[in-house]
Amino acid sequence: MNNNENELSHSNFSVDHIAHAVPDIEEAINQYKRVFGARVSDIKTIEKQDIKIAIVSFANLNIELMEPLSDKSPIANYLQKNPKGGLHHYCLSVGDLKQAYGDQKEKKINILSEPTAGYHGRNLYFIHPSEVCGALIEVEEHEKE
Image (cartoon, rainbow, N blue to C red):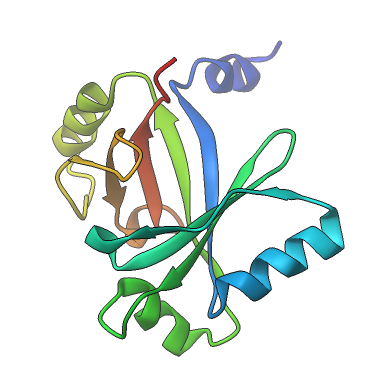
């Protein structure tokens, strides 16, 4: 293993999911099922975030489909610019969220939110797209076993 591979293998972060903003969650579910034969969760309404979500499950990754509940939703703003939908953010999970948040704040990383509880009970925060090549990144604590 070269030094680059060794450094990468020691990251405390892992991919949790990719979030796909969609204008019509039922249609998106039908497309993922038709094209990939994917398993999809029931649709959940998350009033606090002003969205509906469903999780598309693949063997090695989940895709979180998100549809806005109103024009005030951040997802509605995204869809105004991308009417067909698209990649909204990706989520990395970490074992010690408080430590990761503190380390990134210390490095003066532009973080958009304080850690807060997500709909699934895990704490999370978002990193501004200016920090990593224009991508909005959600950081979330690992799923509790």
